[in-house]
Length: 335
Ligand code: PEP
Ligand code: MN
Image (cartoon, rainbow, N blue to C red; front, side):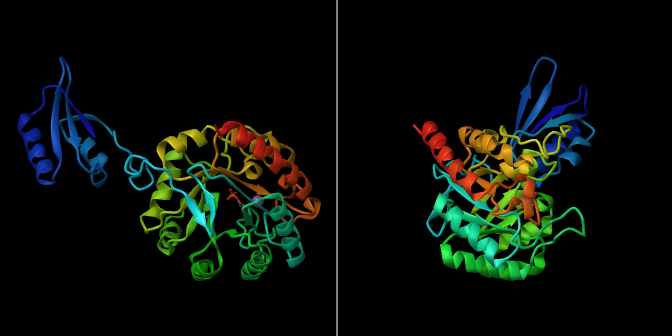
């Protein structure tokens, strides 16, 4: 942290501050220019309140120079984190696709889709059992019955389960049955939920909030990691902007920005990111070209009858062709 001092300040107040900070273990370094006097404060400044320091009588302004996300940041963990779920890897050069319906609707539906995406090369199966719907009258998911159906599909195909948790009430069920626990965009800042999920020490897929900055996403990851979890996959899924032609604006620049700031793998959701099935292919390929570590794609065997997000779901046939193009783009950028 750098503290910029006001002109003509009382030296005794600064000396008192200096002594207090030194007693707390901080190292202070004066930077004196022609017109400006600054003090560099080195140490774990995350324990200090920038607001309180700004209010000191001799302080003109402060500048934070270190990131507040110590566990998620690259600074203290330069090497990429590699997610490993039963040998299926994401991150550190490993690429994988998570695919499946928005919601689990029936045994026939999830089994049919799981078999198809497995044949096409998906590494993981997605499917919501608890759905965060805007309307309380819309289909809310099958709940625990949905988890049971996902387990049947996993048993038949070997595909690990990725599914969203919405409430702390189901932590135990998710700990036992789910391979990758998804925190949805709407819960990205549900801090008590993040803390509890972090304590499970399972793999977590953390989606970017609807209107969240990259720093807020990383701070949400920090919450989960502070519970002991190291295996977190970050997901760019589009953000709210003034644009109405698409459901969200897919922020592809978030991929390299995040990869610079964090060691955690970054995947992209072109389904929620665009809201339209015909945009899924171009945005999926663009995400791969931009260096994403994976994708999460909604696939439905009867999109026109889907109980949730049919308009943005691709069919297994379209998915099959897309997987070939994804492999080609991935190979093209891997040198
Ligand atoms: C989902 O993956 O089905 C979902 C609801 O996504 P998001 O939280 O990104 O809206
Ligand atoms: Mn969906």
